[in-house]
Length: 486
Image 1: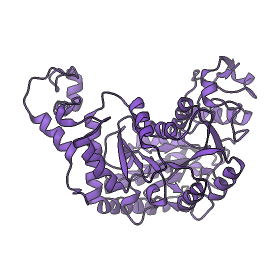
Image 2: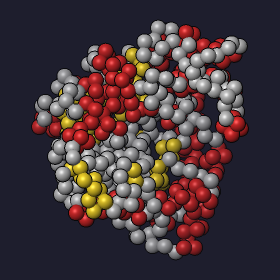
Image 3: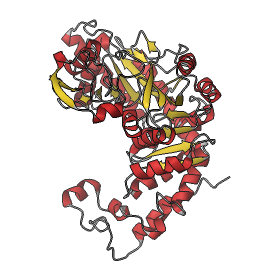
Image 4: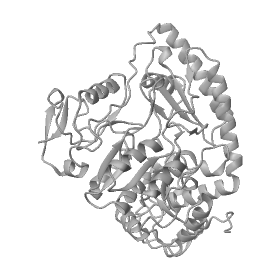
């Protein structure tokens, strides 16, 4: 057992920041002395004393032997892995590295159709081919659930040459499938289970939360330590368990993908976030669960709203109760419109809007005042909606379009490097798309490069834009044209 009270990387960084010395190394602001005044006015100057490069005391991210190695070993024990790697380019870099470590060009990987757009980057770089599986959909809420074990087993029977399976646990809205059963199925085929656990870094620290991916049998999982826990934005971790992952190949991928000038502010925040959860995790998550429960009770008492409580359906074995999803269609508002009003007028900001819902993350850092503000904001939103007298049925029950085939017409890599042209959107139906286009958040692609463009997908994107959603990945933000393979 390691001493989880230690914070080796953070301590070393503090010692360097506090030590007077003449700095002749990058970055050019020289430990804060040359920071632009407007920046210092916003952030202060002290933090920049710790914005330093790979000094001898601080180890090396790509060949760790000292404090980074110690911090990663402490994190591995705390999160239940055999090995942990710190990520300073977000979970995106971990997902890409996981694909590069397990798939060669032309090999197949099973992925949910609702994965994050970072998977496309992994497919383009690796040359792997996605075999899509559609998750179950909650028909009443139009919310994607998780892949079922049966769907994965069926797909592996049809495609016995699949080299890896990628699962999402939990979904953006905190929904978890039966990952233990999925892991057992995947392992009977002697291939690794990779998990996008970006929103589940806290699962291993409280018995009332869903099972963590590693405890369920995942071989590799990527967690956004910044999303719910206390790390700085962009700081994530990758965990490995067992021997199905080629560690050397994974490390080579991370070395290729991560910055050669890593931020020690981000690295130290990962060390500190691990320490906080290892020593105070259950207590802090207790607080988050209590606050989320109070918020749920308050919102249930308000008219015209629905709070997502459904469980025990295919693709929803368990749910992270620190997530709140609220249906605002009864107010005659789209989720995008409600989000804008709450943010601008009531100073309450959700994590994720969609056509009819808003999703909120209640973290251990939230307070009772935050919950009160949320409830008061919704009360104000209801008053505003009643004044507008808008029809609650003005929004069609629209879900992410089903792709025309489980295997795209072209691999994302081939589509990325193909000759392309920008065509009017009305001429794109039936053509092979060359762009990764998605509402953001959540960053789930509606059109993948290499997929045949359907009328359903075009209508979905137009509706998102008409209702105030943001769309990324398209060369023409107006959606008048799309880039296609010629």
